[in-house]
Amino acid sequence: MVSKESCRNEIRAAIRQLSDRCLYSAAKWAGEQLVGIEQDPSNFTPSNTRFQRGSSSIRRRFSTISTPQPSAGFSQPPATPLPQEEDEVIDGDLYLLAKSYFDCREYRRASHVLRDQMSNKSLFLRCYALYLAGEKRKEEEMIELEGPLGKSDAINRELVSLERELSALKRTGAIDSFGLYLYGVVLKEKGNESLARASLVESVNSYPWNWSAWSELQSLCTSIEILNSLNLNSHWMKEFFLGSAYQELRMHGESLAKYEYLQGIFSFSNYIQAQTAKAQYSLREFDQVEIMFEDLLRNDPYRVEDMDLYSNVLYAKEACAALSFLAHKVFLTDKYRPESCCIVGNYYSLKGQHEKAVMYFRRALKLNKKYLSAWTLMGHEYVEMKNTSAAVDAYRRAVDVNPCDYRAWYGLGQAYEMMGMPFYALHYFRKSIFFLPNDSRLWIAMAKCYQSEQLHMLEEAIKCYKRAVNCGDTEGIALNQLAKLHQKLGRNEEAAFYFEKDLERMDAEGLEGPNMFEALVFLATHLKTNKKFDEAEVYCTRLLDYSGPEKEKAKSLLRGIRMAQTDFPSMDMEHFPL
Image (cartoon, rainbow, N blue to C red; front, top):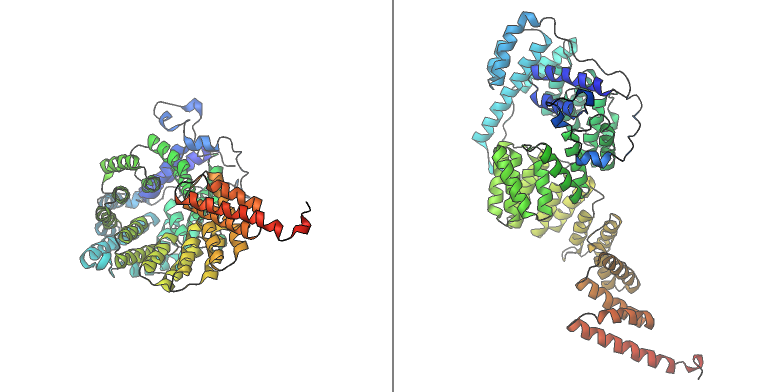
């Protein structure tokens, strides 16, 4: 296994190289992993002990888990960070000027300064600056030309020339790993996903420390088959990539296993803690997620990244005071971040102020048109406001951003169901189930659609409810509906089976209510009809605990059972000799 000191040295070199090429997001990510590596106690100083958090909840979580053995080949010698370019002295002054322009967001000036420079480093920064100049102009055109819900046909007009130049460099072998990364980004933007994947794989194999390249590659891995087909070199950065990719593919067990393994080196990584919280959120372990995010905020109090997910947890738990505190905190930290706007939107949504919530979700989208959560949450708000056409538009934009997002497909199904269009709703529910087949809520939604008056496909609804039960329907909706549907179809034995199962669930959870009363009445009546009087009397006795009409119903059933018990022997006296 790679040593901690080896990883530390690799990351330090990579941060300098990434920053020098203005890949600041990748450099920031690498820096966070650098301080996430546990320090040798003999090297502790006041400046670095701040990051050695022995109380971290994620550390406690994994402290009793034995670290899995590394995957085959993981211990191979790592790639070597790029050496300093020999021609840096020649074009160093121009490069420094171009980098200064780049840092001031004057991308075209930066590109122009490097027009005659031929080193790999200068070629990359020139092309990268030109790409970002095109992106900047595209965003300006989107603001100028946007239609309903921000739709526009603006494109990056530099992509064609960049593809031509970078493909020529690749053919001649005059392109480095950073150029390959940019070439992959350009190909992805132009819709050539297969070539983009190949270019990005080549980039990360030759220089594995560029997290931006891994992130772009991950966005192109829309299925496990595609992921498994990648020919990636063995390196510890690959483990980070697989952990994130598995999470996007909803393989949460595999994702958590990767992060558990990485804990062996990156014991104090905030990134790993946040990713673990995301996986637990998808598994609906809200209490555990809340603890992990609280710990994350204690250690990194000005963090805004991933806090929108924390707000979703607080929203689901209806923790209004905690959500209000979080919204206030991130707003003071950086109110012009999409995550901050989403958190405030969630707060107003929980308060029932849906118009204000929509306003903040729109603000988030002005800051980032591809911010998936904002599109989906805005769709939810429009559903609450009964504005189904606007909800459909919002969900469709979410699908455009990420066609694999089950929440947007599910939202479309809900919206079309509200509009009385069950066939369309079924189509979208099926799409959501395709991407998340083990979620009972989606199966229940589709079953209810089959139950609608327009479709009335009860057998199909039964199949869906059975799938929901197999997927662990914690709310017990499926069992109750299965019992009612079988009762409606005259299948009393099947109905009794599911009512009994539902009753067992409610007893185990200590629940009461109309569903329990309904189950007790049916089971008592059914057993009485089948002359199982002792068992029927048990259910009737439980019904006597109710008050009002329910108690009268119980008394009536009990009288009927006792009368049946006295009448039954007189019909067949030879079996009961005096």
